[in-house]
Length: 173
Image 1 (tube, rainbow, N blue to C red):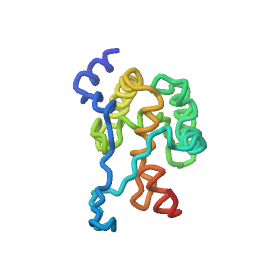
Image 2 (cartoon, helix red, strand yellow):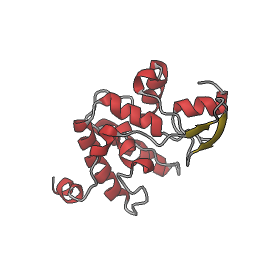
Image 3 (cartoon, rainbow, N blue to C red):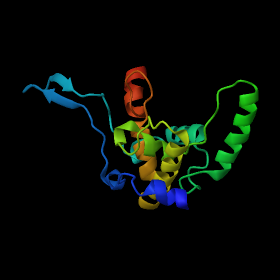
């Protein structure tokens, strides 16, 4: 409780997530309807959660956080399981695995500006992540958290979110 109080008091507000919309591409059209230049730091296509196919949602949840719909922002069982696996991996010289929930990943996404991903102390960053994840879960519905996660997730080749990835990789909407 002391750690939660100590680390939680200086955390940034997460209230802006309720009205969050990603930076999207600005399209400039000519009078005849031709597309002229596009302006964007990162090309993005925002897709509301209702338009993301359930199979895509389920795939991300299965891959990243199978207990997403049932945990309160942190998954204690997954944390304990990952620590046991990491002890085995340490003995075998393998890379450690994580147990971050989707909500924790939202808390540390650089584009949202909630946490400094370069915090030198892993333990400090994790405690802050846990606190923010619990707060975010109390403030937002799971669907909104998943929507933010999917639209902010970097999927390679300049793609943020599944819609931009589908365009970049498959030339499909």
